[in-house]
Amino acid sequence: MQVADDSEFVAEREAMIEIIAAYVYFSAEQTHRRRLRDRVMAAMERVPRHRYVPRELRHIAYEDGPLPIGYGKTISQPFMVALMTDLLDISPQDRVLEVGTGLGYQAAILAELAEQVYTIEILEELARDAHDRLREAGYDRIHFRVGNGANGWPEHAPFHKIIVTAAPGLIPPTLLQQLASGGRMIIPAGIEDDQTLLLVEKSESGRLSTREVIPVRFAPLIVSH
Image 1 (cartoon, rainbow, N blue to C red):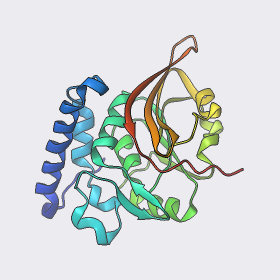
Image 2 (cartoon, rainbow, N blue to C red; image 1 turned 180 degrees about the horizontal axis):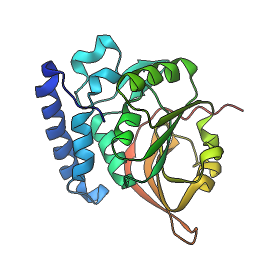
Image 3 (cartoon, rainbow, N blue to C red; image 1 turned 90 degrees about the vertical axis):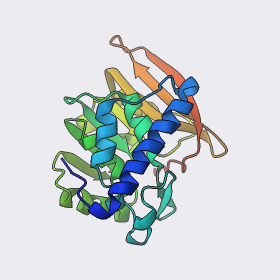
Image 4 (spheres, one colour; image 1 turned 30 degrees about the horizontal axis):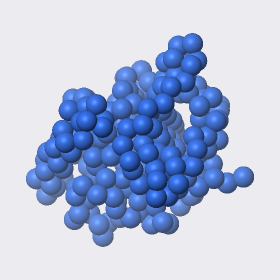
């Protein structure tokens, strides 16, 4: 959908892609991946990350680290965005649920790969900002909701893939229920100083399996009642 055409950031974007590839190679023992799928890397190269960070941070948008986006939230480091996306193994026909819209960067990456993206953000200000950024970029297959991401989006379940960009203590049972048979979920979980990225798979018969990928550090998942 979106083509990165901001010439002033071309070199930074190319460097980001090279750094992601290097990180993937050197973490292969944990992630079981020496390289990411070409579709994922192409999406990372197409989507201009600087459009999804606060304007005053655009000059460091392509550094491989998280950046603050306000309200105590961050945009994840590019390596983590790429790895989590790759682990989902998204098909062009997939319906994907994202919990934690932020300013929309991950949603844009997902929209480059999937048929439909449903994204939930608990903070209305961030959700409104992300909506404007993504619509301006031309993404019309992303659907927005303000609310408690731990509840998922039952009206559009089941989802082929689910990605959670904040860490609950335990995987919310509702999200497991909304994962389609044959589907995958990628989610960080654990207490603040002891989190692990988890890959959850649901077999065609509905059986769940979970694999620990790598230690991570995400903001906690905010749950409203």
